[in-house]
Image (tube, rainbow, N blue to C red; front, side):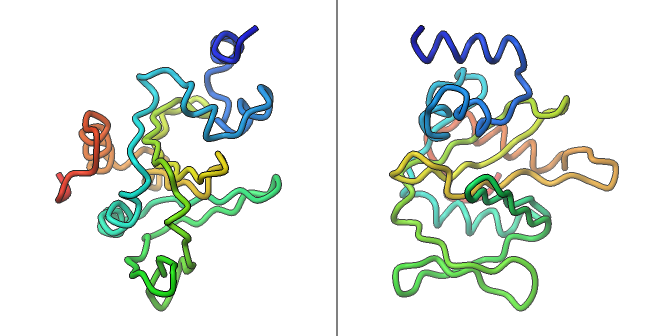
Length: 170
């Protein structure tokens, strides 16, 4: 059975699975799996927009950044710091919170994902590397009652309609 048919079966059985779990089940990289998801769940942008996107997201308020490494998942909830490029990396700046050095020239695609997860709607930017793996994901924030932040959802949904990042935030 081709991957698209297998994926349709997985989605019918449990649409709330993570893209990582679906990819593992199908023997695909997460990036390859994301490219097969239904169009109503994913919009793909070129990876060369990663730096501009990160700069805009640094102004969105609290977000959740996820990094998976060999089955372990690291999660940071809070403001995404702005950064600047130096020595081949996008360096997240700031005195507190999330820090890091991102190799953005290896990002080939950015997926804007809107798919159900654990019984709730979920929205994320998945930064996909040339290897097909997700380098990291940034999920929209939630309030104290676990409700998505409405202004972030509005901007995300607007961006899902576009082929590329707008020059300024909506």
